[in-house]
Structures are given as structure tokens and as C-alpha cells.
Length: 252
Length: 356
Image (cartoon, rainbow over all chains, first blue to last red; front, side, top):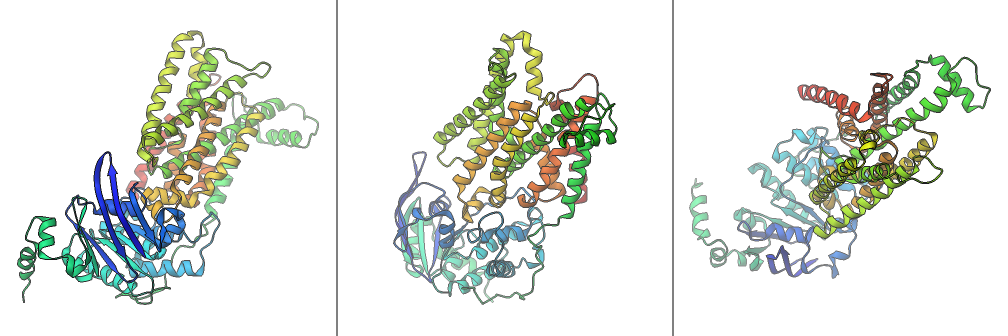
């Protein structure tokens, strides 16, 4: 579905990403991992067309720059990290905006499908009870789930999530990732997530892109990428021993 | 292709608020606006009974003979055009303020944030100071200069921002606007130093005044508001997305650059015309959208219709105070809007905070 060919991003002469490429097919879940400053979010910003980049992203053989904004987001839907809000909209209003690409204009009314999708999105993100609450009163996790629900209402073919679990408690983390796994079973869907938790990447990712200092250390099936040697190169640390030691504390 | 599996949640029917809005508050707003309008026509240096006002307007509209004993000319040729102009400028400034606050996701933004109103003032002040005028049409020189300068500053600000930052980010635009305002104000000060004999006239202009408005002004204001106000209102949904965040607007599929440019252009057109007719009237565009947002909703689909009424009421009452408070002396309307507006704002702000 999505192919990235040697993506390079330069901001004020500094190269943030240098010739990174990957391929994403339907049904796949690509995890982007790496240390702080490795270029994970920059890659997301490039895909979402926020940043200028060299190289090309191809969606089913078409350069994604050629899609109009509303057509683009139906194919590739992005959720960013670092959300903040200033005005008192309700949770329902924010989720409803997810249907913008399907019904533009001032006097357009919501179709039955729109309403179904909004209701579905609020339900799966556990927001039904607070749909009429102001977003200014939400906790970080609730806010994150509100924007996730917006994205589920939009229902793009590829979900791109930049650290979707950063504000979520462990229960919602699991629920979210299980939810995405189920969503992924539908035809023609794929997911890209930036994550810090390597255990999550290992448990859910079919494929992994390991970044270090703007370059791809490895890309491929998760098992082949998250090897001892690769992780040590990217993190400068014996990640395997650390994980075994940490998770070993949970022994029965 | 709706996903069927719902994880761990009871599927239940939602009670989402309907999209269509409750009309009752707007009917109340409309009645209040009408009452304010009548009140403002009645009161002034000469107080006129309501009955006479209606008779005068009635006879003016249906070309009936002028009733005797009524200050007919005061009502029809002085007060009515002034009050109507004030109401229209109030609406214009408030809509622009609301649009800018949403677009830039900045509660401190207003129509003048872009620097266009300073540019327009500069044009007007130069016209006054150096006596630029168009033969046979009084005051036209000031108006035309204000308009030319408004658009020249918009083009200058946008092209400078564009060269600095290809994506026309919010911060760049605000920064360029503020810098340009300072630049324009410094030249205004310079012009005042060179034209000491016209200081009073210039100061009055920069503080804003709608004294001496004509029906021509009313028609121009109305036409500009219909066209460019219409464009702004057309983008209510997009403004909601911008008010949540520019990233969010991009992520739901809004054509960021197009919407941004159209709104900035429309705001500039409206502000340019307002300044050319009434000078710079501060604080209206900042405070009215805020008060209305607290009363109604942050959702622009509900906010804009309400702002039309609150903007008109706020500026009509301010103008009433400006011309009656120290009568026969008339205050610049900008003094009243800033003075009253800030106090009203603080009161409402505190009340709202206490409630929640």
C-alpha cells in the first residue's frame, strides 16, 4: 500500500532523516522504534505532509503529494503527539470533526454512516459517557482517546499513530492495541505506530523500522529487526539483558 | 466496512447533542439588538420619544410628508445612519476577531493582529497630515488611502511571512503582524510630529469615531460584510478544526493553506473598510468573541450567529456612552470600548471561573 523511497528531511541545514525507506502492505503493522531524536516523529511529519522532504512516498503507486487533503486523509490518517487544547469544544464535537473529509461545507448534514462511525468511535474509545463534556476538563489520557476516536471516525486505510499510548494507563494501552489488532483484520487496512515500549513493538508489530540518528538501522519483520546486535547498535545498551532483568521481576 | 468487533465495551445508544442548534437564545439576542438600536436612536444630545422615532422612520421609508414638531432631520439624517454604521462595524470587528482567534488558536488574536488595521490607519493619517484628498468628494481621500494601505500591508505581511516560512505558520504571521504594526505606528507618530496643527484630527481618527456616518457608509459596510463575512462564515467547520489545532485541521483533511489565505484575506478586507470609515476601534474584536464564547459555545457554527448580535449591541452601547457621557463633548469610541470592555470582561471571566 505505502512505499517510502529514500526519505530525507533537512531542517535548517540539519539532516533529521537520511535516506530512510520502508514498505507497508495491507494487514501489516509497522512499528517505528529508536532513541529520542532518532527521527521517528520527523518521519511521521513527513508522511503527513507537514514537513518538506526529499524522496517519495507512494500510495498504491501514486505519489501521495498528488492527493487533495480530504482524499489524502481517507487513505492515510495521522495522530500526533503533544496535543493541547485551548477552547471549550465537547468530546462529541471533536470526534465528529473526524467526518469532515466525507461531508464538507457549512450546511452539509451528517449521513447515517457518519453518525454510525461517530458512535462506534466514541464507544470503542470508552468516551460515550463523556461525549458532551468539554475537552478542557479532560485528563491527558482522555484527551488522547478523544483524538484517537476522531481518527477512528475518519476510518483511514492506514493509521499513523505517533506514540498513541504515551498518556494511557496500562489497561487502555492493552485495549487500544487489541482494538487496533482487530481493526487491522479488515480488508485493506494497515497501521504505523511510533512506540517507545519495545515489548509492545515485539508483541504487536508484524514489521519494525529501527532508527538511529536519522538512519535506518534495520527494517523488516519484527523478529529479524529486534535482534540483540541491532538493538545494541541503536541504543548503545544491552537491551536484551535489561528487558530480561526488568520483566523477570514479575515472575510468579 | 465498519469494524464489527467492539472490545470490552457495552455497545449503547448515545445521546449526542443534535447538530441543529437551539434557536431560543438567538431570538432573545435579536430582540435585544433591536431594543438597543431603538434606544440608541432615541437617546443623545436631544432625547426623542420612541413614538416620534417610529413616526419619523415610517414617513422616511414610505416617503410620507414630514410630520411636524419632530426632530425629523436629527433622526433620519444623523442618528439612524450613525447607529446603523456603528452596529455594522461592531458586527464586522467581532466576526473578524472570532475568526482570527479560531484560525490562530490564540485567544489574544483579533482582526488587528495581522497588522492590517495599523496599515490602514497609517494611510488615513498620511492623508489627513498631508491633505491628500479627492476633489469634490469630502473625506474620500482618507478612505481611499486607508483602503490602499490596508491591502498593501496585507500583501507585504503575507509575502514577508511566506519568504520566512513556506508553510505560513501561525507564529510567523503573528510575529510579522506585530512587527509591522509597530513600524506603522512609528510612522504615524512621525507624521503627527510634522503635522502639529492636525494633531487633534489625527488623534481622534486613531482612537476611532463614527460621528458623521452617512448612508453611503452604511451601504459600503453592509456590502463588504455580506461578501467577506459570508466567506468567513462559510468556513465555520474549518475554523473549528483550526481552533483545536492546525495539526488537527491537517489531519482531518482541511486544505490548510487555501482556508488560511481566504480567511486572512477576508478579515483584512473587512478591517480595512472598517478602519477607513471609523478609525481603529480597539478591544471590540478581542472581547466580544470571548464574552460570546462564554455565553454560547466555542463551536463557530453557534458562535458566529451569536457574535453578530453581541457585536452590534456592544458597539452601539459603547457609542451611546461616547456621545452622551460628557455631552455635548464627544469621546472617541475607542476609549469607551477599552474602558467598558475590560471591566465587563473581567466580571464575566470571574463569574465563569467560579461556576466551573
